[in-house]
Image (tube, rainbow, N blue to C red; front, side, top):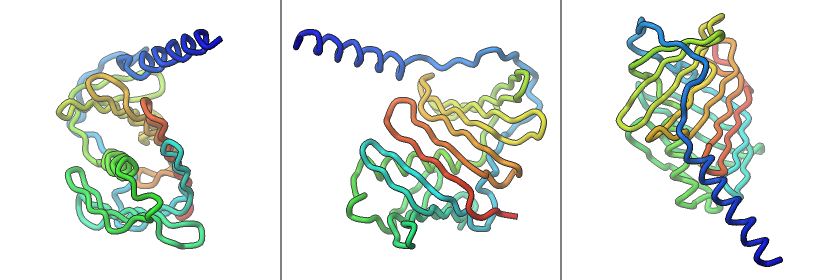
Length: 211
């Protein structure tokens, strides 16, 4: 029995490693000529406050509350997470290359949690993507952006031209899937951030709408 359990564990571990390490490839698409030089995620580009109901699962840490995102400079946002009762849980400023932690609740003050929030929000709030290749399928226009060793696949709905998904890969391995539901170019009604190689998920749901 013990040997069987050990074998089952090893097989499960090998399977998880295989799944998390498989190469990401676009499927059922055709290349098209590059008409766009830059693709943009405009969902956090307004100077108004973006306010969402937030649910975060980072390993065994579950956090829920109100998330407020405010653009304070051209490439910098302030992100504040409070409890449903208004108590501040975490407060930081983030840009593509910088991160400043203003406050964190002691229970959340763990290096792995802070690093994941830093990296995830740097990716989520990135606005401009240089376009290297373009593709399309029946429903989407797809732009591939290559930045250092990172690749970003941006999927825009053909009907309304709204960004609906960003797949972030590194060394050709899928890392994070950002999915958006939106009616306007500058505001996502809901957002799902799903890591592919770690047990991390962030969900945002609209509370107030930016005009």
